Image 1 (cartoon, rainbow, N blue to C red):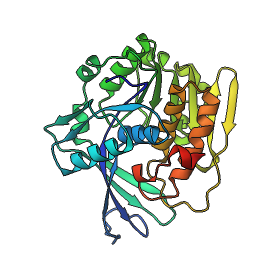
Image 2 (cartoon, helix red, strand yellow):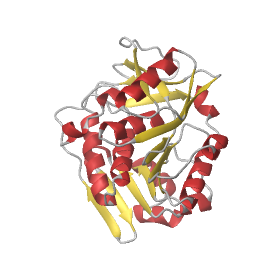
Image 3 (cartoon, rainbow, N blue to C red):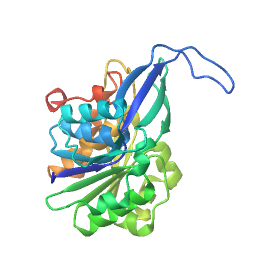
Length: 287
């Protein structure tokens, strides 16, 4: 299957519980009812891209279980191609998410089938007709590195959401078109935003939450604002919404700043609803 946008990354079932506050060590806190939602950084990115009109396929893995069926249904109903999502003997990955009244979340991820996404899966891909490869972690780092290297050699634009921060070979960073990190991750990598380019990527984007994002290029830094929203309900998956919308617009040929401006709007709208994938706006809602 060939699409202008390929996303390589995780697919998880999100088990979400609302809590008044997060428990301290050794403490038990009662929460609300558990809600099961489709998630995972790769699947989220692909769904966000599809909902704003991108032709996109996910490269990933799920288990042969109910959570895997949930994820496939969510991907397909959103318009994401799933022929490159393999079924693993391991259980589908799960993210355990607590959400506090201010909409902030904390997450523990059990990778499961995501650990089976391998370099050989990349070798089986055709990059003919692919304009952008968007990668995220929660799958083996060696697979992400291999995918970026192969795609860059094929002349495909590469986007990496480096969350959590991991060490990449210099050659891989040099083949990266866009490095996407949040403020905390950027601080781990460089003392100032312009220092991100010294690591090797052609450009970088630092997401700033409710303040939007900063596009970092050799020509300088351009900050794009987020749109104001009436109420923050749940920030889960907002960064993935940004990465998906950004990649979608880049695959359509947008300039990086314009793509980031659009992605910041998508991410802002996503926090006004609960969950990750169910919260992502359509192109019509973005306007």
